Structures are given as structure tokens and as C-alpha cells.
Image 1 (tube, rainbow, N blue to C red):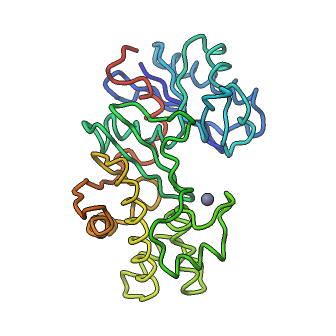
Image 2: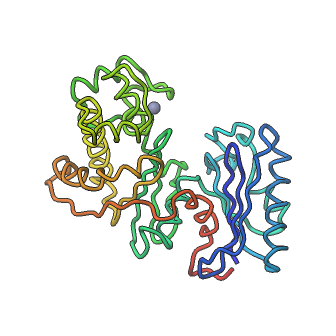
Image 3: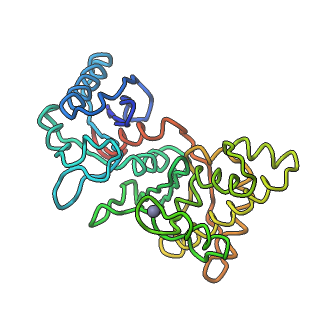
Length: 305
Ligand SMILES: [Zn+2]
């Protein structure tokens, strides 16, 4: 059995999967915000609950909002700040009396889709998580690519490529919270889409409301979506020119905008070096469950649990 934990800022979720990927148990509790010790204990209780309910023991994988530094062996870059600076994997291994695998939540999402989702059977799987922020995960032969500095898949805080005048003006006027200007996240996240429409119309709407307006023939909403598609294609082209994945998967709230799957591929071709790119772009299959399923699959299908 494989146990996966999705350690989020507001909730912790556990799932237990059979070796064939069948869901055996699932539970969700609020995260004890601010307390590292309570967070450890909450994870232990969830693992105990899963094992008691299924009468089986399992491997444990955990998805976290951040990463374990390969240098300090401690959590860094987590927006759940009470985890930062803590040796989470070592502490959990001691508490749970077994080896524990930890990965960034974007990587877990990608592992899930690569194992038995939209990227099943592909060697190099790239997933873009387009929501409040924007991140990405790379999975190669079933394993997340963490990288020598724990930076694998850090995509959102590179500059938007081939910026036009309008984009340069936005970059100059509103620096990113990371301290740089013109980051991909500012344009290609769901928030970036809403920002763009607000700049054009003076009104703040949600992504699905902008899509609806465009479908009703609203010009400004249509302009925003076209700009969004072009920016997503540019960002994907520079990524694809380097990684050249076998499949690209969209996840996060934005992945429900159906027109992207029709409009982005031809735009992507225009920006790719040599203009030849036939990589399939697909929607994540496991939706909200991908993070916790991927944590469970950090122990791969070919490994005995
Ligand atoms: Zn940034």
C-alpha cells in the first residue's frame, strides 16, 4: 500500500492507494497553522488512521509547498512559513519509523499525472500549474526532477520571453513580489489573466467570468484571452526549446478554459525554434486529487511497497 500526504497551508490530506492505484482510504483535516510540532503529530495521526482503516502498512510520500534544500537538508521556500528551516523528512522518518519521500507539491502533481493520469506512459512529462500563482513540475521516467539546487521546474519567476511594448510597460509598472520584473507568473497565472482584464476594463472579474464574457462577444474579454494565450505560448516555447517534453499537461484553475487546448498549440509552433512542435497539450486528469495521489506515487509503480 502507498500512503500519500498533501501538506497544504490550510488542510492536510491523506490518501491510501493499493499498488494498482485504487483508492482505499482518504481523509482531510485542517492544518495546525503556525506549529511545526503539531503539524508532525497531525501527519502521524493521519498515517495511523490510514493503516488502521485498511489493516495494512504502507510507504509514505509527502507533498509540501516548498522543497527540501539539498544543502541544508531543511525545508525552504514554503509559504507555510513554520515549515521553513525544519528537517521535515528526518523528523518524520523518526516519528513514523520508516523512510519518507518528500517532494514539492507541483512535482507531486506531475508524478500523479505521469503515473496514471494524462501523462501515463510518457518518459518526460511537463505539467504547468496555472492558478493563483504559476509553477511547473518535471517528471522523467516516473521520478520528479528536483535538480542539484532543488530548482527543477522553477519556471514562474523567469522573465516572460519576447515581450512586446505592452508587456514591457506592465513589467516596468508592477515589479513581481520576488523582486524581479516581468516574471512569467505575473502574466500566465490565473491572477495574471484577471490583472490583464482589469487593466483593459477597469473591472476585476474571475477567470471563468472573463471566458463567459468573451463567449458573449465582449471585445475586451476576448483581447485579454488572446493576450493570455499568446503569453502562455511564448512561455511554453522557451521551456519546450530546452526540455522538449513528450507531453505537456495543464493543471490548476486555468486548465478548465477549454479554448486553450485549441488556440495555444498553433501559437506555440510560431515561437518554437524551427516552428516544428507536435507535443500534445492535455488537461490534468486527476484534478484536485493529483497532489495527494502524486505524493503516494513518490514510491513508484515498479517499487514494492
Ligand atoms: Zn517573480
